[in-house]
Every structure is written in C-alpha cells, then in structure tokens.
Length: 141
Image 1 (tube, one colour):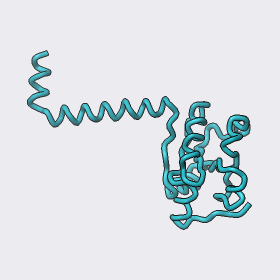
Image 2 (cartoon, rainbow, N blue to C red; image 1 turned 60 degrees about the vertical axis):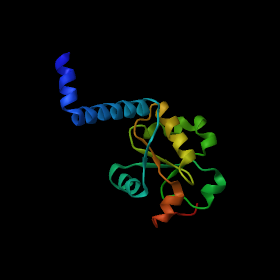
Image 3 (cartoon, rainbow, N blue to C red; image 1 turned 135 degrees about the vertical axis):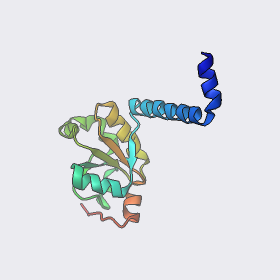
Image 4 (cartoon, helix red, strand yellow; image 1 turned 30 degrees about the vertical axis):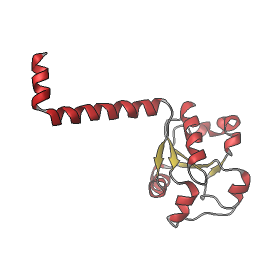
C-alpha cells in the first residue's frame, strides 16, 4: 500500500489524468444506461443518412411539420410517440436521428426510444434551426 501512495505522490499528473479518465468513463456509461441520447450536428446527420442508412424522425407537431421537413424523414409527433413505437420497430437496428425545431423536444424523444431498446438513437443538435443555418434543404409536405 505504501508503494501505491509513493507512486501517486511521485506521479501526481499521471494519477490525476487516470482519475479524470475513470470518472469520464463512468459518467458516459451512466448516461448511456439512463437513455440519454448522443447529439449529432447537421453535417454528421447528413453523413449518417448517406452512409449509415439513418432514419430521420420528425417529432414536431403537424403544423410545424407542414412548414417543411427533412427529406425522407418519418413524422411522429412527440405527443403520439408512445402509441407509435410499433411503427418504428422495423428501424430498431438502424440509426434513428430525432429532430424538432430546436433539439429540446427531440432529445426527450430520443431518450424515450433508448429506454424502449432502440440502441442507435441520436438527437439532431439544434434541430431544424441548425439544419437551415447550415443551408441544408427542407421540403414541403
């Protein structure tokens, strides 16, 4: 035990870095187990759509959805998500990126999907606002 204490004192920077890394790993695992979704930006979402066959899930209400949507996205309003989970079962093994106007509601939708066993769930950071800010297109329904 005295050797461990001596090592810690002699290598304080290394010991501190190790402790920080362990804490980060533990917090990451806790987030994953609690269903907290990983956020992706518009560029990463586009890459996932094009290369990983990701599904975009628009959880905005009908009125918002009618103003424009990301092409080929699925639309299930957040208020109907619980009753529509069966409809999403066929996408369970594909990445699903939830989005709303700003990314707040879709984050809770993504967490809900994670808790239902969907493993590859992401939230579009900044939502449609960020999508448009990056000059990416929306289509009218």
